Amino acid sequence: MAQETEVSAAPAVAEIAEPVIDADVHEMIGNPFEVLPYIDEPWRSRIHIDNWMGHSIPYSWPTTGGLAKPDARPPSGMRAGSDPEFMRKQLFDPWPIEKAVLTGLLYPTEFKVQPEFAAGIAKGYNDWIVNHWLPTDDRFLGSIHVAAQLPEEAVREIERLAGHPQMVQVLLPVISHDVLGRSYYHSIYEAAHRNGLAVAFHQGASIETAVGLPQYYIEWHTAISQAWQSQLIGLVVHGVFDKFPDLRVLMIESSWTWLPHLMWRFDNNFRSLRREVPWVRRMPSEYIREQVRFTTQPMEFVENPDHLLQMFEMVGNDEFLLFSTDYPHWDFDAPDRSLPRSFPKELKRKILYDNAAKFYGL
Amino acid sequence: MRETSEQPVPRPRGRPRARHVVCPTDELPRGGTRLVAIGRRRILVVRTDEDEYLALASHCPHQGGPLDKGTLERMWVSDEVGTYSTSRKRFVVVCPWHNFEIEARRGCSPIEPARLRVATYTVQVEDDHVVVYA
Image 1: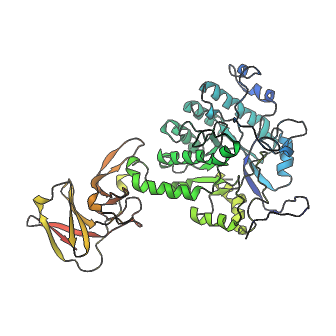
Image 2: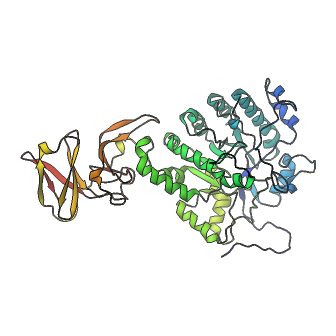
Image 3: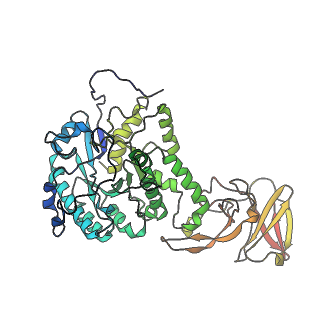
């Protein structure tokens, strides 16, 4: 059964009534002066038109609205995703979204220089979330941002905010210049685990592919799932799941249809090369199946959706996938239109709500 | 991989076993292996460096690689990332074709024991000779 490519001229109306949990929503900085007061000195003074002005991917977007979908720009003319009230109208009014996990896009872990500055930005950004976003709607859930390159600082930041009732995870970008599973970072996983938080991985601005930065955005955007794959392999190989068997990990916006390949390839290499990493005690796919989850967006739009359905059998369960919109970005997926109509109702319910509720303990 | 994860040794099953004299014990040194052909079966007899005798089918359950051309090792184990030690009691034969490990005592993969396994045989010393029942 082919996915639809034509729709009627009727305006889009939400076709689902059951609740949804959106595992990837980007709050964005619109007016930097709104964030500055939350950043401590000496770092605050270094954010200036003639100084550090942020961290962004090196490509221009060949899209209608740049990084965001153009209709997501708030009436103020500020950046899409920067206005909590407008976001609520666009995201919560049309769809029955019960919870939306804010994932940001400024990830200090990927700063390659001045680690103390990165930690200062993380702390200030978190305080902006706590003060500017989370109080506006209890449907918003938050991510704790850290500078993982300073693990002790990162742990302090986790401890400082873990008690906030809306904070549900620690967010790390899938950097391309280090393996975040290394023992150097284990205290961060320990702190997340101890505080009942998940650890989520999202792409950052510095993410590269197996060929570095290819010339065109489409090359980069198609190939960046390699970074999540490499970080996932690293988490297993460096013993994170052995050390923290109850740790919950989420791969956000990684795409997910590569997962059967990785599990098969990884398991087979483990059969041959286990002796190199004898501290890994179980088959890699077992850790992934039990402790790692993925978000739907960017959802594939395949000719035969039955092929997508078969992937749940290949992965080995129907709990590994959490729905996400990626609002307000240009490749946003609609809750009522992104999953194939032919998916069983029970599976849709799990993807749209149950799997995330279980993962986050909601 | 911890020392404590080893499962019970499976009992030999199937048809009654016949007695086969392999060689004098001094022809199979500690830490060595010897391939024995019994009918169409190829059996790998192992003498560990702790002077324990073990025997298992010499065909890797993966793609049939000749385990007798592989290596006999104490199994590498670890309780901490980046550290290596050898097991006190577990020995593996490493297949030369893809380096899959097969535990010499259990005849199975240490990580997928139910899926990857081969026959094991009783072997013992009788009158200074290695004898396998197969």
